[in-house]
Image (cartoon, rainbow, N blue to C red; front, side):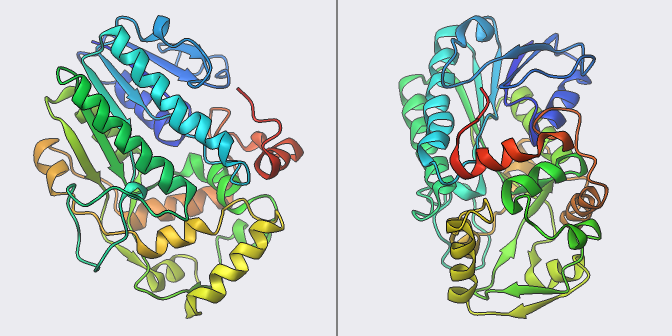
Length: 351
């Protein structure tokens, strides 16, 4: 079996590549990434440098039994046309190349962020609407990709299409990258070094978080490739984390603050280019539904091995060490002035 993975050097991508290389029955694994991998990193993998929205993907995908599409751009949030190009137009290019190559299976990274706002805190299954939250660009793009997959399935009923709707995914090696993506270089280094936030604003509204370790996400993707399944799968670990629990993980406590105050502060910081995370992400987090994972457990025969608490604790340990991971997106050395310029303006985004 030959498998091609886009976004193979990111948070989930690195975990998946390791998982696939140790799975019997998989003869060939090819990884696509925008930036070259360091010499000696997973030498068994057939590496290709490619921009999914600009390069001809057909030569790489030709002969693939399965295509796993993970490539996604989170920044720059001030330049939505840049993220749209990679996330939406890039996905269209991957789907087109997968169809032309004759790949029998296409597995695509969707997200809990594709779901419409919740109506209660009861867990929802995969039938919950995926129209996203309109004020969050990330959510709009994930929802649009869901509609693209609807069309792709209709036009190519012989292709097995799987959508992986994962929770927030953490691992130690990706902590530095996630700090850059969501907190930015002006985050208080002394607090992050000890992963301590004495007072955590709690905007209320039953804000809760589902988390997942990257290695568990990778196993779910592997199962989606190997098992004869179709459709969407919610993937998350337990327990569900509320703000008081997150506060305890940060060695502090959650303090109630009106949502409008927290959003106004985040909006001001984002508009001043002080943080890279747009206020729409807070809107999204405030209304995300909780996902029921029964289908993944039954049809994928998947169970998380690492709890949500342990996944977040490992992420916090990664913040303390600031070591980063082995690939360019995860490396600690990927920071610096050019990265600050990239997430604030979009200039310097590397292919």
